[in-house]
Length: 136
Image (cartoon, rainbow, N blue to C red; front, side):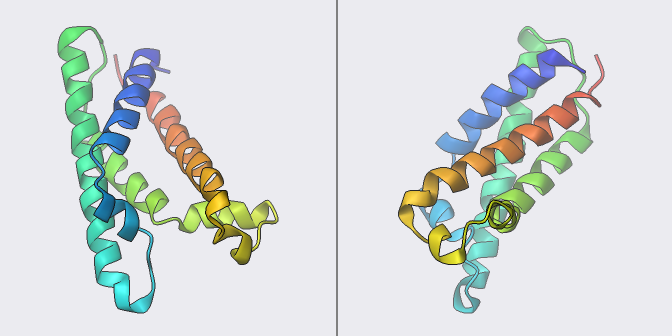
C-alpha cells in the first residue's frame, strides 16, 4: 500500500470536495425526482468532474513537491466514477436502510450528519483501495 498516496489523496480530496462544490451542486446532485432529473445529473456530473480533476491535480503537485508515487490516467476515471456513484446518495441510502433507518427518518434534517458520515467513509474506502494499486 502506498501510504504517501493515501495521505495526500485523503487531505486533497476532502479539500476539493468541500471547497469547490457550490451550493447549486450540493442542493441538486441527489434530487432525483422526475422533474429534477436533468439538474441532478448535471450537478452530479459537474461536481464529480471537478472533484476528480481537482484531486488529481493536487496529487500531481504532491508528486512534484514531496511524494514518490506515480499517477496514472485511470486515477481520474476512478475518482470521477466512484464520486458520481457515491454522491448520488443511492449507496448511502442503501447503507442507512441496512442500519434500520426508514425513508421518513432519512428525510429528517437531523440525519444529515449520517448522510455525510457514510458518504465520506465510502470515499475514504475508495482512496484506501486505490492506495494498494498506486505504484511508487
